[in-house]
Length: 452
Image 1: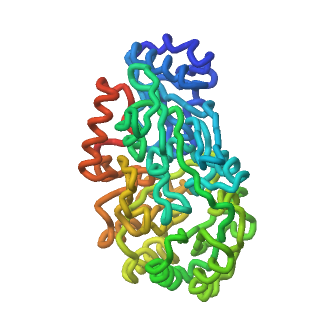
Image 2 (image 1 turned 90 degrees about the vertical axis):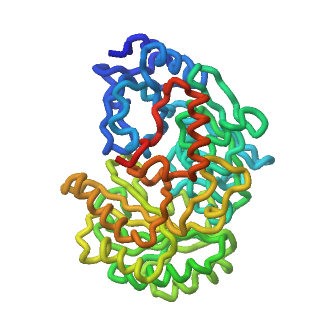
Image 3 (image 1 turned 60 degrees about the vertical axis):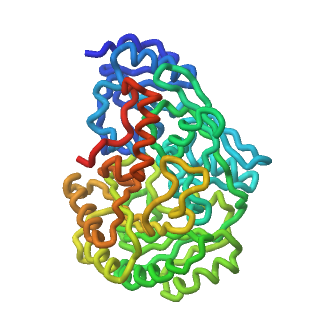
């Protein structure tokens, strides 16, 4: 049995062991589907405390698993029994440099904090659709934002990474110093150290044309078919998402949509209202029952999608697909739309392409995504059990098999093998970097080696 008592007193006493009063609260991630019992949970306040915890864990025969919010906790399930869960939520330092159009975010900073701070100086970040997601974790995994079709993945915006290595040393990786670690931080997910802060570029976008169009889900087939044709010629200045959404009757949902089923289209257009209206005209011609599009401050799109903000038990899985022909739309609607029997909260189609499909000039462990759309199935346990939710998601994703890419976006594909997340050469280089930075395997790998 590893010696955990040696950890007591570290991080100002913010270390919780099994049996402690706060242990059960400390170990729970945002995704409450995961019920892990790590050997210890530690909350460091800064990089120095991270270093002490890393060294103490190694000396005690424990491994280390960094975690910010725990939105992406499922791949760690069943692998933390001999590990210190290193929760970085107390590390909340954030600096926005308006002149240089950059930000530095410590490992506990949430996207909502960056969005608000950058918005005050007419800048925008390549942020995730939920403001409660952590900056560092999502950036390490890639990061598909509302600006991705024109500006690429968030990980490609990273210009420096600060991290604590397995021997407790602190390094700042840049293009000229420890460049391999910076390359790994651009989409490598982790496993090479505890990333304590990232620096990244911001975008000069003060306002956008953004909103939602919605139809009763009886119209899902015709709307998705038209949207699929529209995306083929849509400019890179627009990023859009379609959802077959079965809205739960929950307080976190707006009263006018609770308990209904919709086909929703969300979009963000970089440009003014006149340009945005011109781009969206074909979709408006489909006569939606709801149209919320308007010219808004870029910071306002933080809550554009109806994602749950409070900790929630969810299952999610995804595939990348090449194209969305009519046959694919019909298969998708049959498996997730009216009469399908699906209990999924939503099935989401994110339009990719543009800069997302082109290798980023800076390079990185993940520098593009090999697919035109990301199809994501998300479910809550509504009394049928998690196996039923998983079966519903699997049925939807397998219906798109003829068009599915061999690659996966691991941040939204919890059951995919790690090798599918990157090219063969990038996977091997990342493995070499991890082995050099962590020769004894102190850090828990962020994904499983296989999809089993």
